[in-house]
Length: 242
Image 1 (cartoon, rainbow, N blue to C red):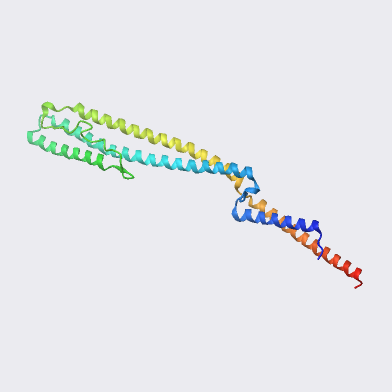
Image 2 (image 1 turned 45 degrees about the horizontal axis):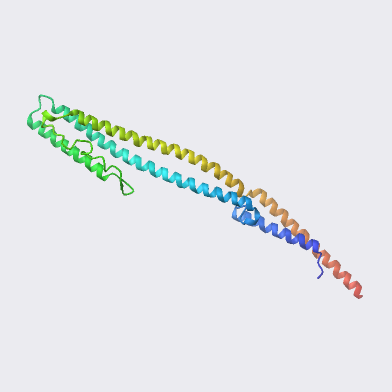
């Protein structure tokens, strides 16, 4: 058969464009192959690295928040025990308490000390001890003894309570700082994702329209080739006298 080269070239181009549009629709990616937009691909790949990086940073900050909240929660329990120790120590100074009464108060204080050390040694985040430093020895309360009124110093307990308050405040500040960084990272992630989508995401309505247009071009050129073939065959027959 004799073909019209122009129609064949048009048909091949229409088929190629049709397939390209079909692939874009099926993948949802305007640059599913580098040849379609080399510079756009390079830019979007850099953006993808930024997007993945911000997600990793957000995850790290969220983990840090959880760690700091865990530590602050443990200190809250420790502080409550210290406040109870202070109340009991003040009570022990009341003249109406007998030696036996103070001995019973000391038993509760001993239990509170043990509770503080337990919280200090058992508070963990992801198997990591976060309050191993917060023991009664660290706060100078290991020798607290209300039965020894002569050497009982209430200021030692108050100082310990103030220290824990300061530590809790520090952890709270760290949580606030992480939350602020997460907000900034989320904005960066959103903006970069939007830019990435503008480069890579397919406009389905537009691409369907394009694909329909290329399908029509295919059909038109197929029809032209068929007519041209028929004309050329008739022409040859005429020359041969058929």
